[in-house]
Image 1 (tube, helix red, strand yellow):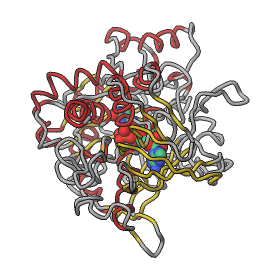
Image 2 (cartoon, protein in one colour):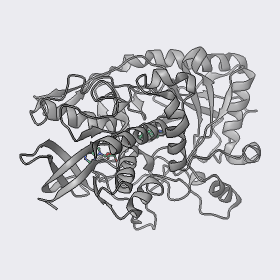
Image 3 (cartoon, protein in one colour):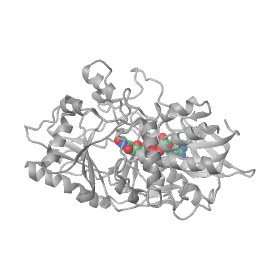
Image 4 (cartoon, rainbow, N blue to C red):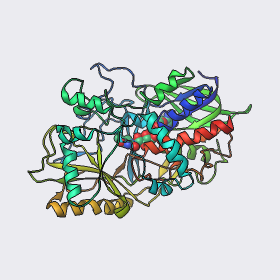
Length: 497
Ligand code: FDA
């Protein structure tokens, strides 16, 4: 409620925010979380909370009148369709040279993501977070994050026999025939539940095309893990459909936080002002960067340093498909949860996930999302003419990612006598180079903040999400975001409270 004073306010309910809320609450601090997206706890008229990728409705996209599927063509035909404008779950946020996909709702990205929960190889950690003590991370914080998130690995014997991972087994065969290491990728999906889906004894979710717009069953999103534990402390409250627009020092100490209440059309129905002793920016790489860049430029937080907005990267995301021979069908039943990857990071700068194409028909296609060592970094800046925040990424900056992904797929194509698919991202277009699922940076650790996420010019303000990470994690990012948040909040609780 307007006029209230809270000890700790957390902006956003994704990984960083959920860790902060749980650990502060366990330390006895009352926490209020503010989330611009919906609560996603009530079934719609069809009895389901989330809609499937095969039949997107208004629940699918954040304030769009047409879907914007990451894989937007099939057999050369555009697959997007009109939908009512609504505060749906997936935001396809468009900047000049890139579309950045993000989750919107209580649980942030955990609502929409593939649940792939990967700890970077220890030997790569120094390039991921150069100022962080790796011994502490691998002894304490990565294990804590993996336990808190409920990470597990597929049963390899089941993998070898189930129809729904035929596509991954083809991926393994092709990787191994070309001499690339094939690895299983851990996930937060409940693997026993998926076995029951396959056996026909549980309601299907991963085996029913659910993923991008939410999973009704099986996936342990933050709603089931960190946020459930945070709420169970009795000290955490969450306001959904509330968007923070300003944070500025309050005259009597602490910070004045201005919050717009939204309706499901995205319109502001009320504006509230609260005072918080401490504010944790956990709005995600893009959300936190946009807020901080705006607040610095417009004079609300003028003393933020000049690193604010800088060091943003796309985790080197690039997608492609390959056309297989008729003797390599990938299966008409494909689990939406990827479980394997091809590791060519040290030799070629690419880690490629074998991704599903859950169309319900046999496509003879192999599909991949590659994470690459793309060195390009962009910056967010305030545009006073439009009163909004720009990002100066250029589409051409994906070229290094394409080159790195080709170190894997050119070799596999040569070995198998196969070609790239050209019908998945447009007409005669091989590379999905227009997007990222993994925005990282914009308020980089030990640059925009101190080495624990403190915005030191403003005691009591912290960054605790993917904005801290300088653009690349060498693998999928959320385990690292969670582990870093665990590390930072430990120190913040021990020394600042
Ligand atoms: P996150 O984005 O999770 O949360 C931020 C929250 O803040 C959001 O809920 C947002 O609505 C809210 N917010 C923003 N601005 C606000 C404001 N002004 N006021 C109030 N609230 C505000 N990663 C991985 O490791 N494995 C995977 O398999 C995948 N797969 C994947 C698929 C897809 C489709 C996407 C979009 C993303 C992934 N990811 C992924 C990426 C992963 O989901 C992402 O890195 C994390 O969710 C980022 O966590 P954060 O805590 O930084 O922010």
